[in-house]
Image (cartoon, rainbow, N blue to C red; front, side, top):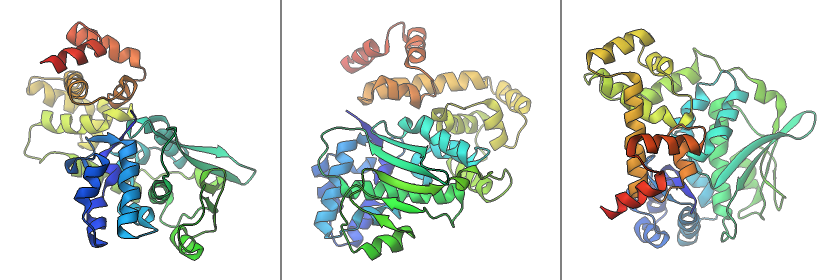
Length: 333
């Protein structure tokens, strides 16, 4: 069973209601708990996403439902993965970060950037699952959201050289061109964009609009300033853990502290950065093993581990047993 974060349906209830339908029966039929919609810590089945979006297009009569839904979504749907992209030194590194850790958002999809010819590269979006029902709206949702993410990283003026869709047009072709801002080709062998290679070599300013967006995002997930330093550190570490690049230097920088100052403050509260991170990993492991069917490879990525074997060793250290055995034991309680 392949999963995707609940943020993949961000904006769904509001859009369905605006278009004159009731989202609750549609979500129920798709097997999506309403509380999971928009929740970065909740996971739903990718097939449930497909059912919810495709059925909403039918119920509302909106042939562009997927593209409309994308307007409610941006890089924030990726959670800490978005932070990893926006703190990268240049656009190429940002896209590498997304590609390396995108399974944290969903192992069911893959986005890659590959050379196309001398002047262009190709961004290709793929759904890795087999035998899915028709999911044209989800493809259009994904490319619409991808375009918004590209524009945050590369600048609001970014426009692909062309957009490619694997299905026939669902609406007038002029609507597609107005939406994407470039020629759109249909019944193509892949879904994605053609991009000027020069766009992928842009530096990202450390003191500029992108940095401000990152700080605004991190402030939004940090606890109130009157909380303890350990609470603030724990909140940031939990959000940044899946990027695989969590360090005390990164967290201290977001708290406007020197790393040694942060360590001293944590010591005064009776803990260390390493102990906080270890506790977060242990707690997340228990929660996911007990409450979800998340594959162990995906759980390893969520915890910021490079390999599943690291998770296995950690479980033996914490619980004196393997992840699979501990999952069985938790569900017997």
